[in-house]
Image 1 (cartoon, rainbow, N blue to C red):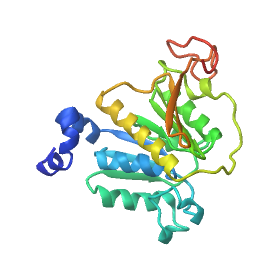
Image 2: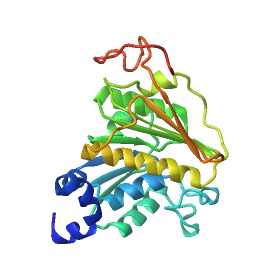
Image 3: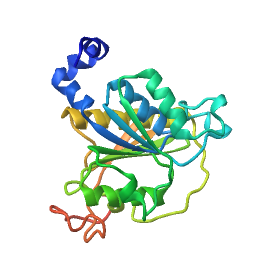
Amino acid sequence: MDDLEREKYSRQILLFGEEGQEKLKNARVFVAGAGGLGSPVSTYLAIAGIGKIILADFDSVDLSNLNRQFLHHEKDVGRSKVESAKEKLLSMNPGIDVEVIKEMLTESNAGSLVPECDLIVDALDNLETRHILNRLAVKRKIPLIHGAVTGYDGQVTTIIPGKTPCFYCIFPRISRKEIFPVLGATPGVIGAIQANEAIKFLTGQGKLLESRLLFWNGLSGSFSEITLAKLNNCPVCGGLKGESGDVGLQ
């Protein structure tokens, strides 16, 4: 690190030292989604000094996005979300690299679209694509941080292939994408927790949300969590070492 970086990240360096900051600088994180969750996730990763953020989203900015997707402004309506997000992220931290992918992740192209990386963050809004991302993460043995929101509520868990339940173990059913209500502050809370999990993982700090599903209830202002178990004979992660246990949620 140079002197500018030492000053910029001085408050973080007090937490995990220059060695931890170097780990963030050398990290490559894939963020799937540049919307409600992708905005806080990529923002906090960018200002934390993650060396390379690969941001994927095929969609364009819509006026109805703006109550929660704060990386996009009214002037960006109709613009590619990833291009809009990249501009804002680099304005916040020009010392990082932001790569964008303007394609929808599908079963056939996920392997080629997702580059080699240290971590995948699920900032998506539908189960079908989440399952595709989960299968890829398990196949490549890349940790996956899942987050989801609806209304005032949200959830987060960290998936470590071969060690924790995968996304299919937790949510074996696939439903079609639908429009759901969401308060802008909800993805702000959940996205910040996802970014916190990512930074903890990359720096080796603290206790991750492994085999735990954390819930946020915005109406009561409270957190709760449940313990997760691996799915016996899971068709996605069942072949990895250490796969055994009860079905679904405990």
